[in-house]
Length: 592
Image 1: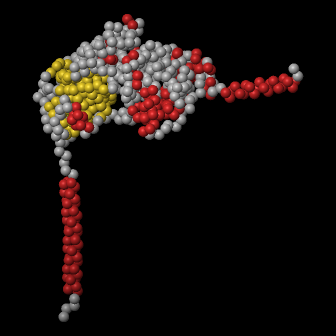
Image 2 (image 1 turned 60 degrees about the vertical axis):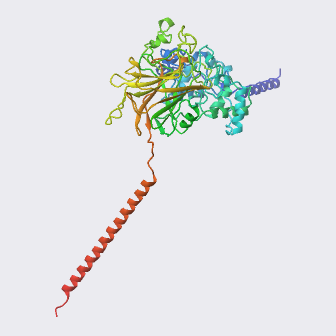
């Protein structure tokens, strides 16, 4: 080969190599950091992450039994929240986002206290758990996310059609409350049961609640879950229409939790059996959403309740008061039993964790949810909504303890309103009973409804170990379940023979408890709230015109009085000066 030919071959080879480099996506550049950076990342990881994700990154830290969804197993190289195509590894920015802001409604918090360098070093260390990060073929260039379409009626209508055509309702339900017929059976790639996302509560979207976040989820899918990527099956515009429809299902990016129910007055009778007039009564009453958390303080602990919020309203008339509460549940469990006084085994035993399960489970009193996993090991749910083992079984079997039977067969759904048995003295209105079923000195009354029967029973609580039925007051209730939402309406006389009465312009403490039979909740294993208040607004609002007119008259009278006094003083002063001048003139006149 001549020198000229050799130079020509080198030029061609160089050109071809340049073409290949240009063709490689940015994400294909493997960056595993230096040995020093990974070592520094290990220090941060061991301090903040290993308790849940495990020393070896396998998601089996000592806190894992009390964390739901299960922490991410970094050894699998499977990540849900990414900007990269389906099946690809996340970018460093994807991992950084989860570390910085966390995953809403999981045990994975954000770590804004970490510096940028610390987070980057942790990312390098996390990559060392899976050999996939060494494989350039597992990297992909981030997808392009277009500017969101305007949410017009036409776009939302088209999105609804796409929602139906793609079979989204099978998991997420007809109106998006996570109650589709497939929802109770969904599992991830590890076989763990998972909870589908409630599309009506955007603040729980773990991949983000913006339209761009939702579009990204449609386009990338959630690796390791039944949630597919629609990048190949739907055109960009249809994905945008679907985004607008899903976005329209929610009522906000924030839950806007409140602390007060305002009970409004009506002259109308409160008839629980007349649904139309009852609905009309509550239409005039403001709705407040309250947060619910797991009962983790006393035996019967519930580290991962499935219900995280409840909405409430109140109306009253001259003789009666009514409360309406609503919450979302993936299915109505209306068989089995439930009661606030049911005994619950120790948490480890109830969830199949301990020596028999091959896991020491730790101290059942400990709660390690503060650290948590990045998210479930690859849930189905639409936006990464929940985890590995959503239904409280501890991973032994799908429905909990081996002999628990199918969900709903043993325990039913239930709800309770809790009030102090008596109000605190006026000089110490802030005093309230212990919010966990009261205490021996300050009991509480529970209006409990087992949704198997749909009737209200009353209990007097003097602590979690002392809850007894009572018949001091008759409480009525009606219940309904519609497309993933429970509605329970209570009614009782305003005055009570042995419990709290609801006087006008009174603030009455109120707390909530919800039991999910599918999650095997009963007794003290429940979702609950702290104390909030219901305010019984006055039945007759004071007229505003008369006070305004009265105030105007008073002001006018005062102004006239001031003017009068000022003028009188001025006249008196002038008269005095004139008299003084006359006297002076008389004394100075020459004698004749």
